[in-house]
Amino acid sequence: MIATQRLTGLSGPISIQREIKQRDRPFAIFHIDICSFGEFNRKYGAEAGDEVLREITAVLLQTQAKVANGIFIGHVGGDDFVLVANLNDTDRVIATLQTLLHCLRQSRYMKSIEERPLEELELAVKVLEIKAGSGSSLDW
Image (tube, rainbow, N blue to C red; front, side):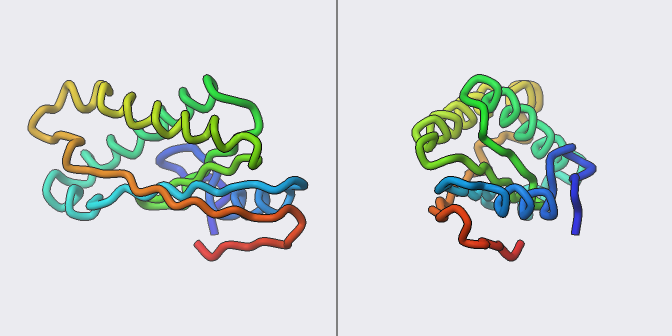
């Protein structure tokens, strides 16, 4: 298991599990999956895919800074990211995700590499509500 993802610099599965276990209030986990990422990688190459992952990371970090303290961002691996937030912060997380989608549409990657449009990618978000102290553990 990885504590930090090398490509994105975000917390990996070990750190994500630690964060989840340390939460002392009810929280939500927003699992973000980039749909069709494997197909995108095959079509445009791993380098283009890595650029997308770095761009998503940059936008997540920018929007996290704008939205609230207490929101944890992790990179499970591949095309899977998570945001962990207290339940009273979920409106802010939803605003973060909306900002993320807007920023990705306006990103330098989308504008500078027209032959590899991010429009081919979609983000799927699953939301899990977890009670604090439940000893929650997720299998990544």
